[in-house]
Image 1 (cartoon, rainbow, N blue to C red):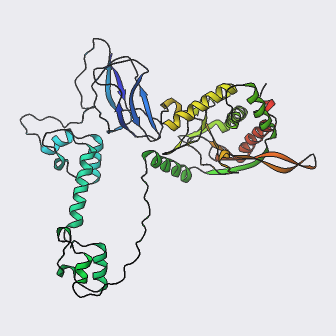
Image 2 (cartoon, rainbow, N blue to C red):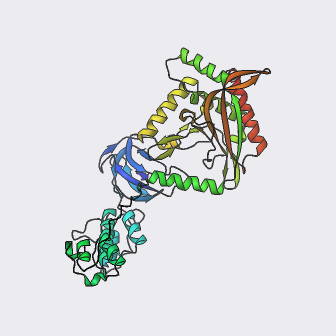
Image 3 (spheres, rainbow, N blue to C red):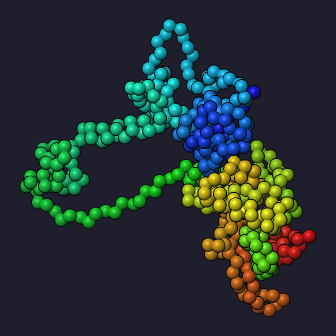
Length: 434
């Protein structure tokens, strides 16, 4: 039986995805689990694996199309199975009416990609204006080219062509540009034409520097929208404490000497955070559909900065992994995040997030919660400070922790109990190694 290939959802709030590339062609034989296509979602660019083995057929989306989540964009046929005819669910058409000529606009819609159709609608462009002589499919590039042409024609219609300096000089001298014959390209009025009318030239003003406008990627825009929504809809509150990390540092040095795998402070913290969540399950919950849902697994997400924004790959079942396993998994996830090669499973399912900026010299900061999770832990750097130990001043390795909590799920007491448990583990790591 044929298996549907659909546009997958990476997160609960995702509505569409953009097909970047088919990694297999129609008619190719595919194996379940091998990369089938590359898509750009609200969170990242990921490779999607084939959901079954068979022959790829009935591809209804091309690279560049923005497709609603859950829409069928292809089929994988079993050996010897024939492809069914395309239906209205996969190819947008209008109901057929016998002996009725096909309207040109309807024909254009039939040959336009979903992204091109949406862009044309947003700019009030009739698709019939974009129809190609060869009848080929209208793409987003055709809409952009039409908009560029329309903008150029609009900007020049009804105006006298003149350089900016000529306009400024004419305005200062109270001269009518329509009465000045231009000698520039396409009859444009230039500064010399204005000066030739008898006006006295004025000293040139220094050029005004223009601010640099940076392009905003889809990932960055999505990050802005998600964090803005979290900040404005989730009732945040913060708990901050200072912890003596001297034993944590000692543990780190000892572990480094006993293994060839590179262990980081973040690896140790993931293990301790997972253990603290096991003792405080309310912090491992989420707010969903106006209810509190306790998660069965402890899946710790790591905030990773990449060129185009922020990704949070997930270490699944972190409480059940040993230190070496945690270190290997963390290293692989960070490398894949920076290379833009994370899979869907590596980005979803997180129940708690850890954000460590200590390596950048940051002492403390407040992090924004990653919905629908109930909390996120912000970790500052470890630095040596003079603190009292048994009533005497001593130099100790100290660290600041800031816990951001969703007040719909966690109250102050529960958040404080989690931090109290975690601080105890950091100051006495051997308590976790039972």
